[in-house]
Amino acid sequence: MKVLLDTNIILDALQERKPFDIEAKEILLRSQNNEYECCITANAITDIFYLYSKARDIRSARSVTSFLLKNYTVVSITHKNCIDAMSLPIKDFEDALVIVCAIQAGANYIITRDKKLLQSESSVPIITTDDFLRKI
Image 1 (cartoon, rainbow, N blue to C red):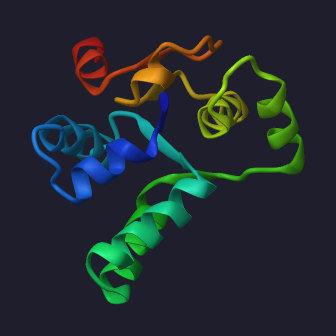
Image 2 (tube, rainbow, N blue to C red):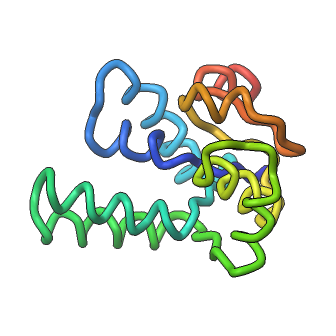
């Protein structure tokens, strides 16, 4: 099974954002134990690096980014992905891009706690961390 993690899930785990960090960490841990494959979008990597460098420092941001690149598949974002995302009936372009990338990656689920993304139409089911942990 393959899941695409929204940026907020990774940040919840890495920055220990209470109360969301416990389930987010569980999802990352189970992936590292090869229960399923996690992927993240290329823009998630840049966003996480930026936010982490501002919250901590460049060294920490590089360490976190290296961890992510070692353990998770990065889904590239192409010109066509952007065009496809623009064609979706979703107001938030980043959310539309997450859906397009999940389709491209062959993901079985998108995991997020973004309420707008959770309500979006997608051929890939969009679920919360709690729902995902109950399913597996």
